[in-house]
Image (cartoon, rainbow, N blue to C red; front, side, top):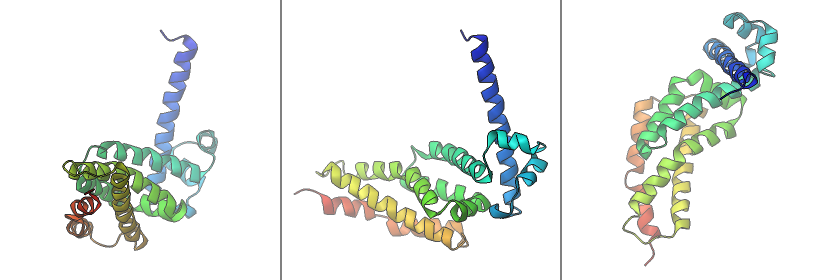
Length: 198
């Protein structure tokens, strides 16, 4: 049974999370109208109906808020795609990035390319790794080679997606996803066969 102090701490944490989500929702809304670099704490406070002190109680600055928002949203997406096939995982992650273009491009331009690369890599690696294992069930292949193949294809997917972001995500998403699928069809099977031990 929780003590009164523990109950109070949990209640405060719950209210803090609600406030953080409300503040981040305001930032996400404003990002559709302004670049991240042009947004002020006052803009967010006015949209959210809070004062500046409340903002600074929860976040050091707008960059910290943005990082919190992006991590919060992307962790939910990553959790949803862990068990998908490679093609489905790539479809989900690309559609998330596309549906949240303003936020994604702000992250890409403000937090840096490495931030997005890391997110995409961590999001799809498990699905790619699982595909490599499935393709190597009847093949004698070293675990190191399985890891190498999974890493190779994950990095390839990441590079293609990052290039798409660099071009402002202007290419139509359905055709882009189809082209990736066609290009990679049979590629994992071929890589596994090339790495098989005689």
